[in-house]
Amino acid sequence: MKVGVIGTGYVGLVTGACLATIGHTVVCMDNNEAKIQRLRQGVMPIYEPGLEELVAAAVAAGHLVFTTEMAETVRPSDVVFITVGTPSRPDGSPDLSAVRAVARAIGSHLDGRFRVIVNKSTVPVGSGNWVRMLVEDGANLAAATARSSHHTGNGVAVLAPAEEPNFSVASNPEFLREGSAVWDTFNPDRIVIGAEDARAVEVMRQLYAHWVSPAEANTQAVPMVVTDLASAEMIKYAANAFLATKISFINEIANICERVGADVTRIAEAIGLDKRIGRSFLNAGAGWGGSCFPKDVSALVSTAAEYGHECQLLKATLSVNDHQRQVVIEKLQRELRILKGRTVALWGLAFKPHTDDIRCAPALAVAEHLLNLGCRVVAHDPVVTAHQVQGQLPDLQVAAGALAAVQGADALLVMTEWPEYAQVNLGVVAAALRQPIVIDARNCLDAQAVQGAGLRYVGIGR
Ligand code: UDX
Image (cartoon, rainbow, N blue to C red; front, side, top):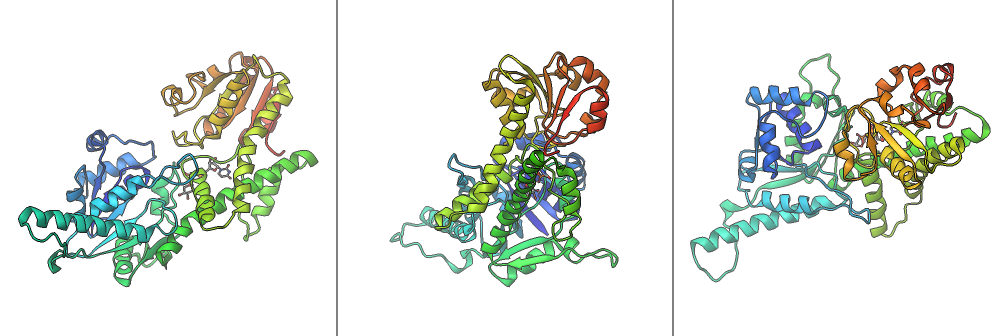
């Protein structure tokens, strides 16, 4: 099939590259000229394992091209994806200006050939109808402009039958995680399609046939959940809100564990064996961050408020998460007493390992707090660069290596569980630290090994 993808951010680029890999012909569009130029040269705008190779292969096979032209993206396509950003506004509601502009622009390039316009950006519940309206507006405006340039009539805009835009709007939320986005796209748990009519469902079924009706008899088909538009939009929010709540739940349990002398890692292991609960997303730590959970939970709370419902549970999910940063600071305070004038080595800036993304990273929030308290903070991250954090935290020092960060520090604070931190020579760390204190805010180090090196180990909830 022919696919257009508008917006080459995380979701758009990964979706486009994966659909091209399974044999569709994909045009990826972005209005950022420089980004498209770099993509044409094979340079990825994001760090995502496997993506560069996938893009290179799809381009070489002639299945993937990049453009800045809307017409080249919409005209040839059977399916047009909207995958532009919906960043949070200061009040927590999403900024939909990019979706608005793109939906109108798509409308202006439609004709009588049937197309499915698929929203993959995470938009508030109810946006499917709004997208339909904007696409129609775009189509009407284009038709009126075309007519007025041809003849001057009485100004009444009536579409000729041949120009009638023929489209259907669908919602197809993504569930991919940064750092394993390519793997997640190829190995989905489910494919969710919210649609207005059976025609759109049929097109989407063909698009995703690779997963929902695999050719090989021994390959398990991925369930395709077909719903109305609003339910599909809600599924995305509900999934993220549930996962965020699961993490806040285990962090709450961790805080109780500390007080009663229990070990949260053993609790997570044991309750996780209950199939109704499941082990994943039960790692207590410094809380969740990233580009999705904070934005989506806040957006759901704000949508609910718009419709007259107060989200008590989800507000608690957010506040437990905020508090968890404070828990980390308090641990340092307990160990060092006075924080002013101390040097803290901080390992890990990314919001989680295997990504260079620092959006809403707990590490940055904690670093900022420590700087405000008068600490010197010397950070290290295997991927995040000094340049990336400069704008946000100009006083944060970034060391070239994990051991360099520790040199002469009063304590080591681990904020992101990069696997390399578990491999560092603890004897060298012990010799480099001024005081033998390790706060493991991700429970990712071997507590016994840390203690064996003569260091004091402080984890979360244990
Ligand atoms: C998430 C969802 O998993 C994905 O389905 C959705 O499409 C986008 O949001 P992502 O933000 O990439 O993906 O990261 P994820 O791996 O889910 O981690 C989110 C945050 O939760 C990270 O800050 C991570 O450190 C934290 N986390 C995760 C925990 O603190 N404990 C856990 O047990 C799991």
